[in-house]
Image (cartoon, rainbow, N blue to C red):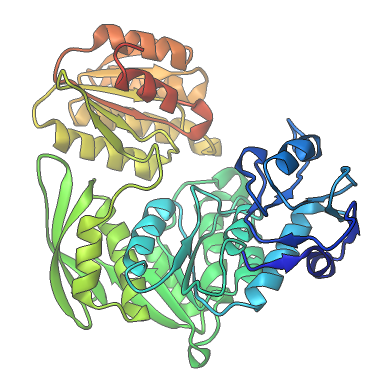
Length: 461
């Protein structure tokens, strides 16, 4: 973050300074986790459902933090405000107004974090880049990302999530990106957004809020998703389409996938073409790579440099198709960060390609947030497990989703085991495992199935 005095912060957020016997300067990061406090940091003491950040004030001061941003005095240098989350937003707006990076906002139902990571690795070749950490894509995470930027930051890549209507509009007001990217519209958060059409409307808030073309606004849209294509009519920004079809401005041709699950293709852009072999497995990542390439091309990165960066890109966010090869030949695929029908199908198909005839054990938990379509989507997933020839399916948890998934897979001829929780799942799979098996672990994050993958990665655990 740019260096600020406590008085400047107080003025920016409408707060009052307490506990400072002299001038106090914040030179470090703004953090909400007391364990991440470092010299010069500002600790935002958020009151949550399980903990109160104010209780950790002594800990962050001991770690070298300069001050606390809280809703009450804490016995040391602090800025007191009515609402800490609102104050974080105001501070992010204050800092954003004093910087001049190229700001990119991106959203979508699937692939936001992977695309953000790919784009950051392309842009880092051109200059200092700050990108959303992990999935800090909400009203707290986005301000924290902006507050990591300083006067040297050239590119600011901001992932934007939507849990309810209006979320992205709020984030756009804070970030004010010149470029916006919409990846796709799918059945994610349909309970709070009102079905898939509600998801489309929420994601469409991003292109609608972009500056017009005459002021440098660009909307990068997925030509392979009809709901995203329709957003071109709702924005005043200049539109650039990417996709696999021949009419897309940025497109992939001659896509192939090898036995390790890595996709290769020829990248076509208005400035040329170049070969790409993705360093991350999954044919579904071709769309993410094209999205990142389209944004980078708008910014002015050459096609050759984009292709080189995509080919050398590494995984930066955990639990997203994270592949581990054990000494006994067992392959563990941890894709348990989150799940919806689109990502579940993509993971299954990629795992099938990687298995190349080896036995597959699939560990699935519930896809949450599917509302009245829970049974439909889980049943369809169970049928696909059968169609793809998965030998063993372990279904974790109880309720409508897991039960319909298990029933449909059994009807499709799959050997199905049901277990109540992740501990039981890990114990069962350890018993079932044979050398050279391929194990895919996936569910919505609430299921916590990454713990299953972690237990399987270490057979001695």
